[in-house]
Structures are given as C-alpha cells and as structure tokens.
Image 1: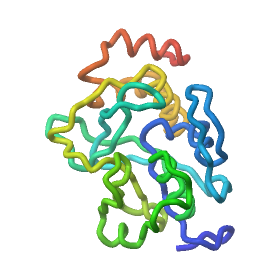
Image 2: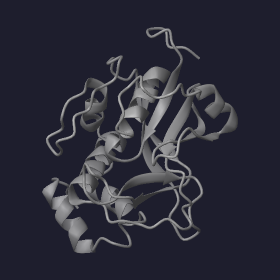
Image 3: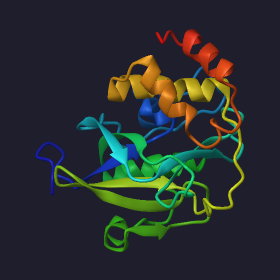
Image 4: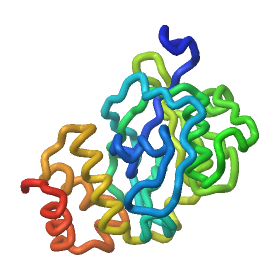
Length: 222
C-alpha cells in the first residue's frame, strides 16, 4: 500500500523503548545532540515527519539487557518468545515511516551513518516474518502483523530470551519510557508504573521506592 503524499511504501516502526517519546525520536529524524548525552545523531536523509502515529500492543514482552553507552544501564529489547514467567503484552508506539526512513533509524541505532549499511530487503522480512540482517543488538527485524494495511516492523536483538542476562535500566532511560507511555497511550501514573514494574530487568532489579521516586520526579500522579 502507498501513501498518497509520499507516493512510497510505508511501514509502521514499532517503538517500545525511549522512542516511545516523540521528542526522543526527533533526534533520529532531524539529527542533533540530545541534552542527556554527548552522542550526535546525523538524522534521516529524508527528514519528513512520520505520516501518522498510534499506540500499539505487541504480543510478547520487553526486557532490559546490555549496557548503553548513551544512557548507562540496560536498554529495552523486544521478544516475541518470552520466558513463561514473564508478563505478556508489549506496549509500543507506531510511527508511519517510509522504508528508507526506517532503515536510517535502524542504521543510527547501530551507531552508523544513514546510507552506509548494505541494502536491507524489507520484502524479505515481510515474507519470512523474522530476519537477522546483522549480528548487532538491534539488527533482528520482526514483522509483527499489519495495521491499517501497513506492516508493523520491530527491531530487536538476536539473543535467546531464555538465557539472556538482565541489566537494570537507568533512572533517565526508564523515565523517558514512562513519558513516552503517557504520551502515546494516554496512561495515568498507576498504569504506566504498574506496567514498568512487571518488565524483566525492572521487576527483578528496581526497588518499589525507586519507581515511586521516578514517578514523582517526572510529575506523575499515583
């Protein structure tokens, strides 16, 4: 399906981490250096804003692992093959992008410059449902269904969720996700922090009092 304005195939980019926040995603689109890091993003080659945005819920869950050089602490990863004891349902936000924009986003997530990656065959991802385009932490692409005639694409790690080591996310990173959940899903503080409290890496490594402090710092009423 094609968008009449762009005249190019579009896909839903399903964000589930800090890019739930539109102001965070804006640095990938427009480029620049966010105030919380010294890392500079080059931006998309095509800096047109997303055609649409909407809340999504994906099957599976979100967990926190690795060690972020931008945020410190663990970062969010999606799995559609969660451990049996992990809570189900991953809150996400769909941004309707061109295929080129989606690839530019993926490229920047891997700290590379847009246009420098080998061509990524989106049609292969749509046909196979799951493709590892590289070994990196965000180079496994999943076709998570379709919404309004456009495919929903998620990128995540190739790691086995059954054996991956969890890592505590930082205060700033989890706060950005909390803001993004409120912004995209319209959730109140109880729902935002009730959801976050059950995610692997938060449930196991954060204390309830820390979540209360984060809620207060970000202006959530609970």
